[in-house]
Length: 493
Image (cartoon, rainbow, N blue to C red; front, top):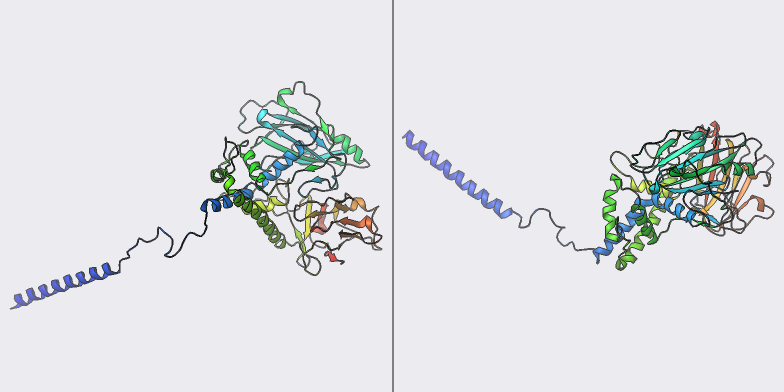
């Protein structure tokens, strides 16, 4: 009897398990999806762009402009210099006076004259002989590669420490023996550009500083045994055009850059993408005409995007919390301006940084030798606008060991506003010409028309939106501890 009951129970249990299993399989089978998980957009989603090739052309052009910003800006500077009569690689462009408003460049100063030159190391190493500091003048400046990375400084901040010497610029992957008696400087690119200033010392004049600048020498290493005399061009009376383009000429520039310079590992992905818009190494520029309009829209939008990023950048770096002055030089995490980390190339941040500035220093120390401040708004918190007149009161005792200057650019271009007056800036070097207040301060007026009787204190804007820069050369402790504060810009009318 017990055995029969045991067999019966076992049979019932087996039947139930089979039934449950069969039911479970039926239920799972009924709920199984008829489509695979993933692999396509959600049901009902359709192609948003009518022409995907045009969409890709727009995107690639947009990203190309951002990616290439440092290289494009310095390339345009190179091209602009070489277009001047008499200029060529290894010829020195030495200005006999401060720039005029006919010279178009990104945020230059109108205080001390510039000394510039370009070189192309594809023809071999190049020598630059820098004179020693004298009792009349000294050189300050830097040399940058094709991506605007500083490869050396000169003068007291350079390899020669003010004692002068021969700098030897070496092309990428240079393997030949390096002769003695030089400061060897390895470049990561073939094209390089230098920008120096000759600073008068003591009672020396600007003419003394200019004469000192013309003791520079530049020539190929192959001619070192008997170098030809260095040629100089004074560009003071010559218009120069060095601003980047924001149409398809920007893509032509990028094509020229990548077809000369070595490809760095960080850039391979972008260069691969550029092929879809006619930019390839070793091939002629082949812009797909069918998508020219799409690319032009992408390039223009990249310009507006960088303008937006800079507006946000300036607003996020106010120097005094109760004023509207921004500290505009914002370095990367390594206190430089390359924006390349172990993990990423920060293309957007790099583009915003180089969009409105050229020739950054290699590193920005905690207490920089020159600081740049710009107002993001007037004293009422309203943005500085085109067509209005503003007043900037500069206190008597600005904490700058050397001097201060106030320069006005057009916000749209970051270049001087070219006016018949030729004036884009005023500063402590103009104090003898400006009218001062009773307390020793000075009011600088910025607007379309000079206030009555105050033309000497006026920087014209011609109705364009002004971008105001205050530079302090040799800022002192009162600036760094913030016991000194600049008054806000005031709207006059």
